[in-house]
Image 1 (spheres, one colour):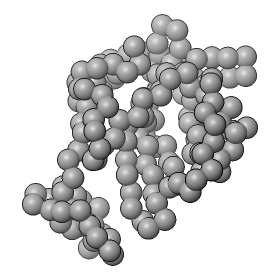
Image 2 (cartoon, rainbow, N blue to C red; image 1 turned 120 degrees about the vertical axis):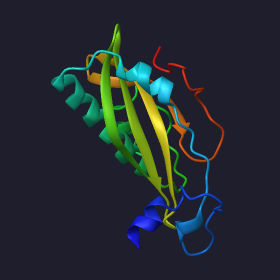
Image 3 (cartoon, rainbow, N blue to C red; image 1 turned 90 degrees about the vertical axis):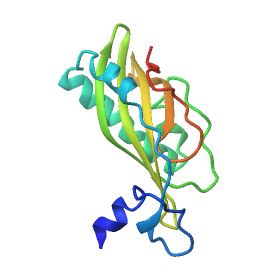
Image 4 (tube, rainbow, N blue to C red; image 1 turned 135 degrees about the vertical axis):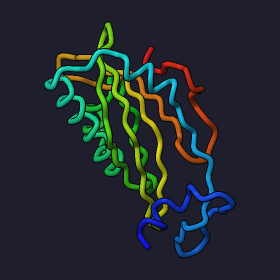
Length: 161
């Protein structure tokens, strides 16, 4: 059943899947950030125009990373990283919320990656954006894994500050 597959990682007593993906009994700790998110949600909302511009920049991120495209990375980051030519999972930025900061914008998104074997990982991506003559660019990015791996942000921290 599809619902069982999607929600399977929430079941107690589970274990990581092996071979064919059947997550009906997978258990993986989830790093939640309720106090951090509450502080973010209290920031003033960005305008519709600002939000649309940020969504476009963050949509380019997935294309840039998935295609190891340096020109696209330069349209995403103030100081773009060198593209990694190694095979990587497909990147998707979803559920983005954009807020105003005194000197720019902050965006909180969910980053989802899908590997060739169908395995999925998710993270919270908190970006600080600054307006440049060429448009909005990510000045700083904090990626906090949702499942597995070490926690990057302690709940209550403000990675946009």
